[in-house]
Picture (cartoon, rainbow, N blue to C red):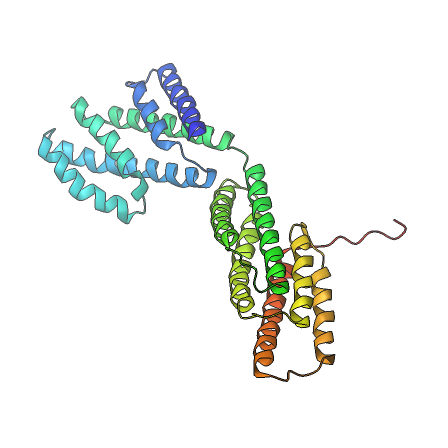
Length: 321
């Protein structure tokens, strides 16, 4: 918010000075239009400034006809609102209704309607909204560091979660609050919102890698929650649970890696092969627990499939290195 205030001050000052240098009547109006035009992202700025300009032009056309026919009376403003607002919305310039109203009400206060007045208002629009657009396009705060920090936060939370999964499988009596799951959900939502703003600031060659990353984590979090439910059904120690615990301990390291290492996937394949050579369950209790562990392995495979699809592959060193 602080940075946006600074941008607004620069745009308003630029607009007033430029309008004054052009000797336009009411240069402060250009400053007010610049204040209305400053936005938080480049793409949103282009969209809203265009809407504000064309809405104001449409409003001026309606106002010029109404003021010419009926004169400058307060009730004419009500007719303007009833007729111009629906037309502006119909043309797709809804965001510019307020800006257009400011321009029309300023003309009404002057009590004069002529081609010169209309031209002056259009020039003020160009100067005011143009100054806002220049400031918006010139610089937007860098989001890369913030996005990178959010990514590290999510990766660390996932790492803690997988460590807790392994500990719970080794010792079913261990009690874990699951607080990291809620923290991870909040961090992912924050990352999704920040990545959308980042994308809106990329007017040319938009980079969607951050958006893809946070949506990948969002999908994986759903898988993690399902895995947590399956782990809760493993209520006694057994060799199968110990083997799967090793998988999560390996994953707790891999999840912080920028690349997809494939180590957990290979270890999972070895564990599943080992399961096939082990004796069949002899009791109903053992059958139910081993069934939950098998489902847990399938859910883990799905998690890894998502990571393999969306994460960058681990770089292969060149021969001789």
